[in-house]
Amino acid sequence: MDGYLGIILIVIVVALLAAGGMFLLFRPSQRHAPPVAPPEAPTIPEESQAPATGVIEDDTLTTTVPPPAKPAEPVAPPPPAFEIPPPSAGRMVRLRARLARSQSTLGKGLLELLSRDRLDDDVWDEIEDMLITADVGVSPTRTMVEELRTKVKVLGSRSHDEVRGLLREQLLALIGADMDRTLHTAPHGERPAVVLVVGVNGTGKTTTTGKLARALIGDGRKVLLGAADTFRAAAADQLQTWGERVGAEVVRKDEGADPASVAFDAVSKGIDDKVDTVIVDTAGRLHTKTGLMDELGKVKRVIEKKATVDEVLLVLDATTGQNGMRQAQVFAEAVNITGIVLTKLDGTAKGGIVISVQRELGVPVKLVGLGEGPDDLAPFDPEVFTDALLGD
Image (cartoon, rainbow, N blue to C red):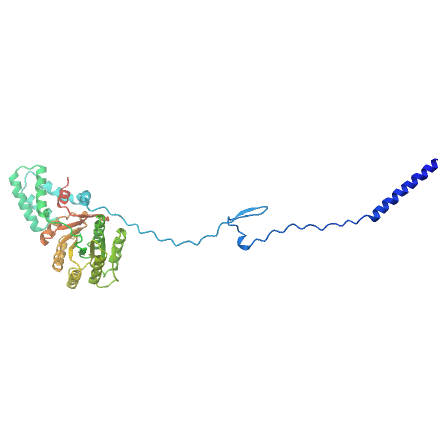
């Protein structure tokens, strides 16, 4: 029985082994599937590779791309910054202290002499010398001294205030407080006022022209400048600088051009542009050159073909004394001088030239230059000037 069971077990094992072998032999073959390729990224057109937002994104990095730079647009130059000059009213008063510092030597000396208890001939001679030294002139000095001697005798004893009052009265009489010092620069009708500036080289003529333009613009006038000093290129350049600072146009030509043609063109443009005042700067002619003086007369005649010459201002250096008087006389013969501009009056004790030049020419001092600053040209005020001479 045991043998029989053993045989059965052996048969079962053999059958199982046979069945497994047959399974292995006849099972379907397994093949490896090919690797699956990752999906391809969609092709982006070249124009769209940089998104409109300026941002490109991928799995690892976000990059901001700046938009393409626009071409720079041309920048217009800024308009020129013109200076706004102060009005001319009150300039003489504002500059009174400066004038007094340089002129009061004469006034103080006269006050000291006249305040003495005893006024003999020697003292009166000193007073006379002091006035002549100050360029009052011989004839005006003698007139003034005679008037003072008479009034001192009448007064008898004199206080300081009385002496000062006497001097002030006499100086105002000689300076001519009642003279018309109006500067005619207002347009008439459709034509501008024309101002001709004349004088010898070195007196500050071109500078005076620029300062006068500045003062008029400060008063609200529209001004045009004519650079008729064609013998010196520096003069036209200097005038151009003055004009650019305050917005006044300058008419100029090449060096050596005909001065009369420059003046004519300036006045013509002034009429076309409807300006208020045309100021013509002429060459600083030597008063010994007859031909040059004739040319100055020609400039004036040519201007008068277009407009009236309202002012002919003679610029004199206050420091030249009696030599300035000779210059004034020669210019007065060439053109009809209407007013005098005294420059460099702040640096001299010779303010008496105001008296002598007016007496000789019968023409008033209308403007005075009291320094190097652009606003140091002022209308002449006889009372302010006299008070500055005598001091406070």
